[in-house]
Picture 1: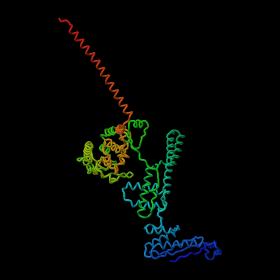
Picture 2 (picture 1 turned 180 degrees about the vertical axis):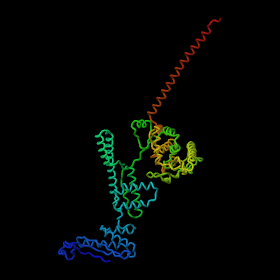
Picture 3 (picture 1 turned 120 degrees about the vertical axis):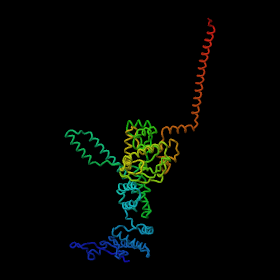
Picture 4 (picture 1 turned 90 degrees about the horizontal axis):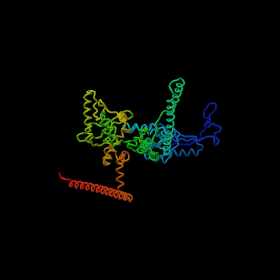
Length: 545
């Protein structure tokens, strides 16, 4: 195909504004004109012509080098490969129009043979949109991905080319997120201080009212309260990007996933702690929880269940406390999967909250599908609950909503998981017990089962965990008495000399004390015998009448 280099003068006539071209008086000067190239490209499918054109070269040699580069790219496609020829021609036409650098020949060859895009003009933002549109997961999971992309990924790296995304770019992103956290905390502290100061200003008096008005205006100008991006959220952002880039690799768009190699601060999951007497006393003084995850003792759990015995949803609180169902699983449990005759229920569905909307969903994982055994007391509780629900159904008549769920609103409709949590928190506050979350009742169920020496595998299966390590690491909050028994059993296994001597001394002291008691009892017996003998002798000497 035709191609050439040529000199070009860009000088213009000051009167007409037209380029002078070959009539420029300085044209023959060695450094006056620049060089340009033009290379014919294979025609489009409709037969129209297209070409690669570029100018501004300082020398003919530089122009010729780029022309050779263009021809080398055209030569990558075999003569009997019209699809490859069209891809390269389209690539060169786009590079020419956007004035971007010519792609490397060997890299283009690799991309062509691998079936990848020949030019990596796809941005991270464009790919994330395409990836998210192709996801077929439940709505709540999709919303979480969308939030990560909208709030974090697009603002920081969305403008970057997908094929040029590097680990350093992601490190910079997470550094900026941490810096933003510090700014958010500072802004929130200033806004809180201003609000506290406003609360001290009296309402009465013109001067006070003017001051309050000015302070309110100043507060309105301050940044609003915002939540920081914590370690767990940062990990989720990284996981979202890693999943998206893995799919890009699977589609041969890129060959490297920088999200798999960027290092960020780990998120440490809070350990569950038991509400011991000491912790309760400190909470009563300060109002602070020792950990975000707290578990009641068996006595505290029993006190709460006694307190809510007359609550309409008592059976739900009872079931979660003893069998460890998740909130959504309890709200979505159907009667059809609850067999009170065989003392079991099958967890096969749940109600999931997305924002404030609620939708029915399958369990999140395969391990979530499980059969949960029921004890006699729980079965009796559920039977009484069913009788009460039957009475409600008759009372509502045709207005009853037949959802078939075990736990419902008064008219039979779905329970809203968020409202269930709110109700639980109000009941806990009214009971006067130290606070726990609704999900902590599930922690408590795990702790009770482990304290009862139930095999860890059975506990894990009951809770619906995919691995027993999850049960050990997260849910095993050791109750004080369980820890004490374990400590004593461990201590008895180690023979210590000082322990043996202490035991010997204790036995000697006990023996001496027993001997002293025996001697004392012996003296007392001798005295009693002497008194009895004297009494008997005096009786004999008594004269007869």
